[in-house]
Every structure is written in structure tokens, then in C-alpha cells.
Length: 69
Image (cartoon, rainbow, N blue to C red; front, side, top):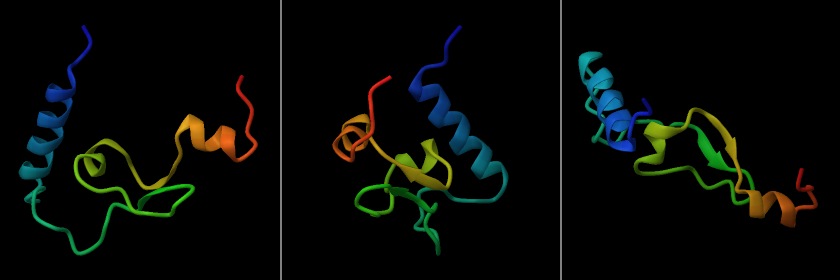
């Protein structure tokens, strides 16, 4: 059975609370997840959903000359 987004987020929050981290407080550093094109750091719920790295949408990749497989 596939978990809902709500279940995934709830589990992430519980894991962080069990480790002593209050996830809704501003951390001293960001998650280091940034948009590949704009280099803006991810914010909000995206911090829970993605790990460190660069992320781009399909549209951004195609506009940069990538190809659709």
C-alpha cells in the first residue's frame, strides 16, 4: 500500500522530534537543496521532502537544451 504525502511528512516530523530536533524552527543552516537554474535554496515543506543537492524541473532542463527521453 502506498503511503500518502501526509503519512510521509508525519513520519519525517516524528523522526526529527525523536532526535531532539524541532523541525518547524529555523535551522542555523539550510538543507543545501537548491534549484539548479536559480540557485535559490528550497524552503518550507520541501526541506523535508528532498535531500541536499540541486533540483530542476523537467521544463527547466528542456529549456537548457536537455532532451526528453
